Every structure is written in C-alpha cells, then in structure tokens.
Image 1 (spheres, rainbow, N blue to C red):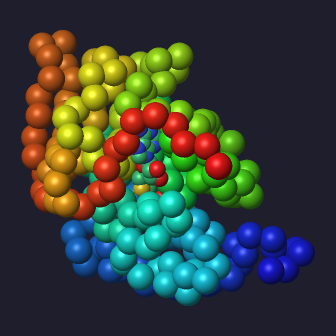
Image 2: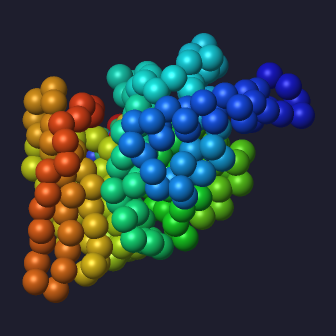
Length: 221
Ligand code: SAH
C-alpha cells in the first residue's frame, strides 16, 4: 500500500494486462472496443491483495462470501455478446467485485448494477470511486426485481444463474434490447441471449457456463 496510490492501480504494468488481452484474442474475442476495455481496466484492484498476483490469469477467483470474480474470457464473451450493437443504458445483476461493471463502463453511457450482499456492494463502490467511473450507478438490492425506477434498459447482463428467467427483467428490457444470462439450477448452466423486438422475445443458447446461483433477497453485513 502506498499513500500516493492507495488502491495499487500502478502495481501491475500495462504489459501484464496486454498478455491477458492477447490470450482473449487467441480464444476468439475480436471486438476491438471490448479488447481495449480489458487493457484499460486493472483487474488486480478488484481482487483481495493476497490473490492479486493471479489477477491476470484467465481464471475465476474467490472474492469472499462464497462468490467469485468471473473468468476474463467469460466476461469478454458476455460483454461482446451484449454489445453486438451500441447499447447506452445497461443493467448488470450481480455486481460482485465490480469488474464486469467497470468493463461495461468504458463501453456504455450508463451502467446500473445491483448486488445483494451489502459488503461486496460497498467494496465495489470504493473501486468505482477510485477509478473515477462516474457513469456506474450501484446499489444493494435484489436483482430478481431489476431496477424499475431506472427501466427500461437497452441491455441486461446477469452474472449469477437463476433457475428460470426473472419476469421483472424481461419487463424492464426495452424493445430492441438484449439480455445475456446464465440459466439453470445445476452446477452447469446455459448461457442464453434474449432479444426483444416488437413481436416479442427471441431466445438463443450460446454455450454451457458455470456461475454461482442467483439468490433471492438482500444480505446485510
Ligand atoms: N459480475 C461479478 C461476478 C460476481 S459473482 C464480477 O465481475 O465480479 C455473482 C454475484 O451475484 C455475487 O456477488 C452474488 O452475491 C450476486 N447475486 C446473487 N444473487 C443476486 C441477486 N438476486 N441480486 C443481486 N446480486 C445477486
């Protein structure tokens, strides 16, 4: 810890991040803006200090309370899938460390993000402040309910798996909007894309993924 750099933004060089970006490119992520967002976002500040040396490995890591920061490849895939066209107003459900929201912040006008565990939401907010991500609006709440006061959204990204698609999130997706989410109750879920048009909803399955479950209600502490 350094008083001129309290969150350790300067701790790893841009070159380390570039190695992660090359790995993402090798794995088929081609969207240039998405790759730029990864090279601009320091993942180590979203991870506890004891694990920060592993921040640029392409792997999920624990963030406390039994939750994880997602694997960068999955964050990149979900981001690129969500942003197939520009989408100014995004809702993220499952703030966790705040990393996915920080990636989206560089690519969208406004990011609304909801986390049910109060202490994770608090820490994520400190990171948004430290990185001056003023277009991220975060709150503690139950993402099953979405964020009705801020709806509709052009895009919705869910980073924990519900058993079925939450009705409130479908309601809060604007016409022309897209939702990307894992669905399923087991260890492995389906990553699905829901596109809303005037005619209704169209659903596509992208691939199998592993996420923590989307749980109901808010947890203090
Ligand atoms: N996007 C995160 C990944 C976090 S893991 C990141 O970039 O780090 C999923 C998160 O979803 C966990 O923090 C978990 O507490 C949260 N979560 C689970 N159910 C939720 C709900 N109903 N509402 C809001 N957040 C929820």
